[in-house]
Length: 154
Image (cartoon, rainbow, N blue to C red; front, top):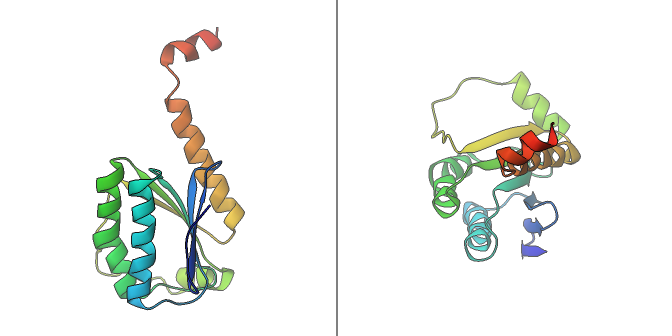
């Protein structure tokens, strides 16, 4: 289901996987960047409480510092206020972007870190989806009553 689509991004919800995809097609202005994420937040708040996300930056490259700061300092807090549960984000980079990050890594000033947002980084979208599905399966397993687990192992 297409949640939001512009020339610079698509937000797509896959109800089978229970994953909300944010696919960047080209570099947005800061206002367009914020609007995209706010549209996703509105969907999560009004329609489906999604806590699994796949953000594909492979066509975009690195985020601007202001964009990254807004995500860390504003957006994830708003998202958590809506969901009140852990949030899992699989971020997909291009091979070159990922290599540049690893090669040029330097510690930067501390940004807001939230205990409820869990990131994992990939160069392959299918690997990101596999990780998110494994998170979901782990979460689903936690929903099985302990008594049922003990009966099935005897």
